[in-house]
Image 1 (cartoon, rainbow, N blue to C red):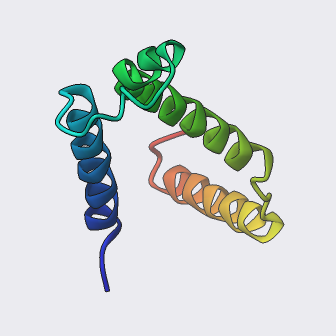
Image 2 (tube, rainbow, N blue to C red):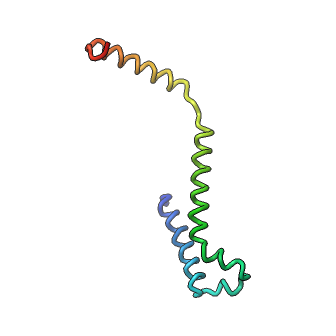
Image 3 (cartoon, rainbow, N blue to C red):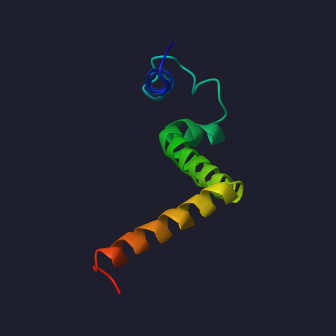
Length: 95
């Protein structure tokens, strides 16, 4: 089974290699594109980082929006807090 790091690295390396080949004109991609799309190839790494950032922000917002409350965990945590306070009162650490 391949880890996510290996998969991600393979995608990034492939993207960088294709971009470098197009940018340095080893593969004449720019000659087949209209002049207005040359900036797309030139600024592709910037766009990739920008879209990765946008994806990350939306992923975090989605995770926060769909975060489930766990009522059982809340009750358990409040019980543990109450037990800890009682124990600290018995040891006369708090009033």
